[in-house]
Amino acid sequence: MNQDELKQAVGRAALDYVPDNCIVGVGTGSTANCFIDALATIKGRIQGAVSSSEASVARLKSHGIPVFELNAVDHLPVYVDGADEINRQLQMIKGGGAALTREKIVAAVAEQFICIADESKLVDVLGKFPLPVEVIPMARSYVARQLVKLGGHPAYREGVITDNGNIILDVHGLQISEANKLESQINEIVGVVTNGLFAHRRADVLLLGTSKGVQTLK
Ligand SMILES: O=C(CO)[C@H](O)[C@H](O)COP(=O)(O)O
Image (cartoon, rainbow, N blue to C red; front, side, top):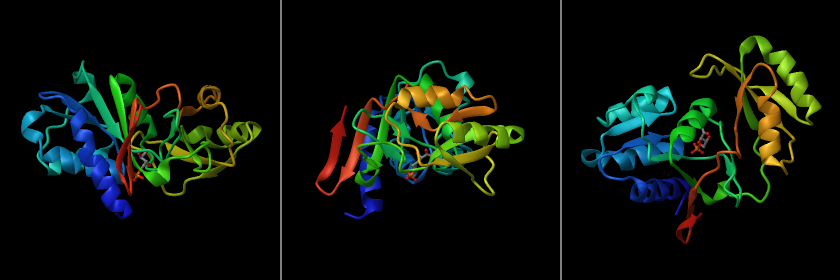
């Protein structure tokens, strides 16, 4: 199977975690898109979705899946999303698609986080993928200097404005041994909205697309 087929396989496999008549949390990116397409095949047995990005809202609506505001939803049994990297503790780096803040919010509300990923995303140590940090625009230079003090090499993601109107700094060169600590340290920098480490709120289940089939890690 090629990478697209692996993404489609995990997108379909995630349907097993969607209870009848629920509102589903939906992530962002090419793997999440495969889940949205799979979700369309069972749209008659769900109420609808909440989404972590305007791009996913558009895809959900194109399939005729009702989209709810998160503030109008008090029970979200499951959130399904991809990752840029995930380790065997199910900690992740996310935000390659610049949707990290809304992803973290929807994931916080959800009872279960189901990560769907092809096998290229599984790593022993997080940090080869540059860590995205969403930053209030006027704080960009200050935050960049603070990230250097933490040992990183931040790069401004040119031409990208998040759905929240902010910018992204991608931090290269981090060897992430204590993901919980680093997630908190970066979030404490004034001007940071959030960073793409999902260590405090890890995935509960990883559906990993491999050439031997979909493997489940919990
Ligand atoms: O965090 C994300 C978007 O902000 C995505 O989940 C992550 O970038 C993975 O994307 P893809 O499935 O396209 O590889």
